[in-house]
Amino acid sequence: MDWITLLRSLQSDLIKRLTSGCLLHCETEGQYSELTVISGERLKALREFCWLMAEKYKRTSPVRDVFINNMKGKLGEEVVKERLADFVTEVDYERRFGGDGKVDFTLTSDPSVGIAVKSRHGSIDRVRWSINSDEVEKNAAVVCILIQEEVNEAQAEYHLFLAGFLPTQMIKLRTGKILFGIDQLLYGGGLRCYLEQLQFSTNDNSYKQKYPIYKHNPRQEPTYQQPKNQFIKPYFYPGQDDYSRYRNADLNLLYVKLGDECFEKGQYDAAITTYNEALRLNSEDANTHYKRGNARYQLGDYEGAIEDYTQAITINPNYAGAYHKSGHARYQLGDYEGAIEDYTQAIRINPYDAVAYGDRADTRILIGDHQGAIEDYTQAIKINPHNDYVDSKKPSQIEDKEGTIEGFTQLIKMSPNDVDAYKNRGNARYDQGDYQGAIEDYTQAIKINPNDADAYYNRGNARYSQRDQPGAIEDFQKATDLYRKEGKLAEHKNVRERILDLQIEESLDILNF
Image 1: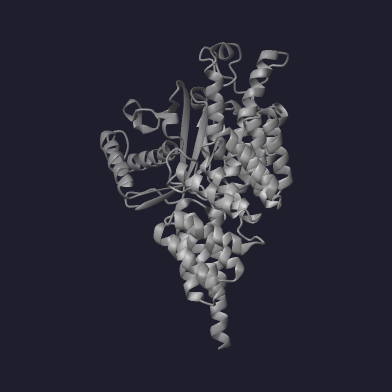
Image 2: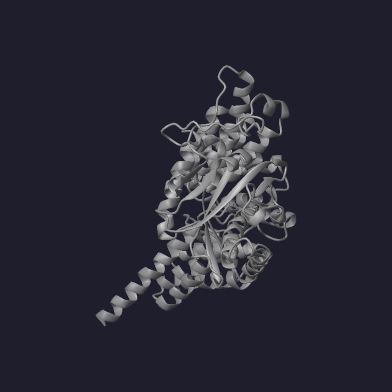
């Protein structure tokens, strides 16, 4: 599978999710997000700027038309500016007539590489973006933004979707301008990866001069020969060994980046497929083996994960992280002795890893080594007094629940403000059927950190087990709000479904009554 095919596959998934509203939403600048919301003071500043532009150019066009055109452009540019942050530099509006120039952003590291931004309002199945030959020549990529609301003077909030992008090297024109829909774009999650690859290639001057595949030669007239398909694959130069080496390095980097994007979205199967392609190009990359192991771990393929971690360690014997994650996988398989050995190796390589001490302590509890566990907890606290070493991803549903509860009780005595210790002890009490004890632990965790969505969700489950449906719904509602703010869409959707199920259940109870 090539990277273009993968991005088109992800784009098809985005189009399906656009209709249901299940989109990735992250408010952190510089991180990828499918949805951007602009309102309040931020929108006010954009509106004031656009009125200034309308006043400036009122002699050439109707004021309202100038305002709306500028607002569309600025909204789209805000999305790109927020998503790519310092990676790109905005072009000064004062240098462009009407605010709709041929270049909107350039790479901060290489101002000669341009990025065009196109913003449109319309329905998903009918909206079209356009680009002309001059823009194709001056830009390396065109980024397309879909505006949900109609742009006008009074709109109080805008929901903007990063609809996708196209490398201009993939575009050939029959005439001076073409239109394309959302299904012809590549998935926006690959934009930064593509630009990073572009940056890597253009930074090598000899490579750029010898193989100018990314940037048009300004001394050559662009050709507009158009095949049946408006899009073409990147140019290739067969028989050039050094080019092949550069190209493989670029593709490897791109596959790894795309795999990382898939992993962050919880698309673990797609991540594995992409990491497979990266390893096909470079099988000696320990980090990629490690990342593929993480994806397999998330899918419950613990044996496959161990194979990848072991391969990473074979390539790099001092890969502490691979030992650590291998310990997690062995823990999940019930191989507690093997897990302890892996954690011990991680500690040998990095004796200041508080998390590894905490995880080895958790595992020692399971084999009855309570004294060893307490010693590890104590060492973890000495290294990191902030107590973020307990691995909350590991399940607490284990055979020796009493031993686990005692272990976390000892940890709480040593560190009474450890949120994870309370949550993990609550999990163990819940598994034991002590729902009231679990509620007390989750409540204490919430007192320490009122924004812990997992604690609210777990307490909701415990309350439901005690037939406290109103309390469960209240906790689930709080959890779903927090998950939404954190951009955890899968968790947000799951809890919303739980709330709906409980509300239906309440309605049936009322009817039966």
